[in-house]
Length: 302
Ligand SMILES: [Zn+2]
Image (cartoon, rainbow, N blue to C red; front, side):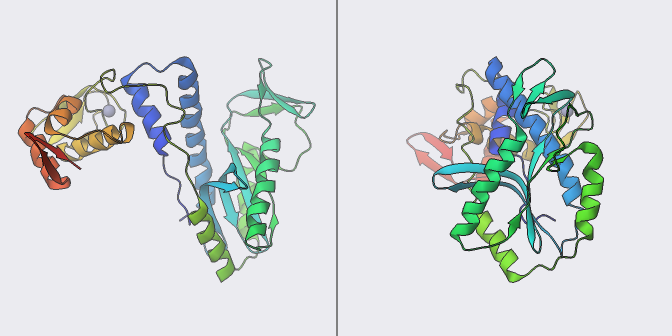
């Protein structure tokens, strides 16, 4: 198990929810698609780090750090005796080419060079470690995790790990001798404490409660085509089933993440969930899981 697990970010959840409930402008649609694809690649990569011997390695996923007012991100950070490994993950699909130290897609669009990215994050990580007088050697790599990825005119660059090399890389890493000490755990604890996730709202397009499509969505395929019975919600598309109570709570959390200041009332949730037959059922669930406050003739829940 990773010392710091990777979870879906609130930003990804918000994008997913908005993409389902409104038409995203093309710029945001592109951002959303990149985040979703990136996360998919990270999950793929995590299968390899999960295979590392946990008495020799500490794995910290998705670190967002800051040094001298500059923020940077490390997709995975592997701590081992002697050397620590910042990992930059790329889920690029299809064919790319490399020319004069630059990355291009086949349609000649320039892509930010991941080798520049690891150089920058490596430098900033060193600053973070210097600040706490922690000395170690860092070895940064870019991992291309998508099996369809091809890089033409690839540089003879040892810092790039291609999809076909992933298994071997981790086999060799796992074979290293490494003994974890208190210092390693202290460092891991420090980095987790310093981790500051970015705002889950800054890249979202403008949206309002009124312009979003209402309804409970399937928890697995996000379809609105669900049937709610007395106790279960059943998806008409994928057949997935969920307890009504769980489904309602999940929808409330989705709403609260999109609108952190919204006042939760029975009527609001009744409208938001749409397919739930009775206000009574919603009131009962709100009473169990939230604290009720009265303001005038309204009851709201926090
Ligand atoms: Zn479904």
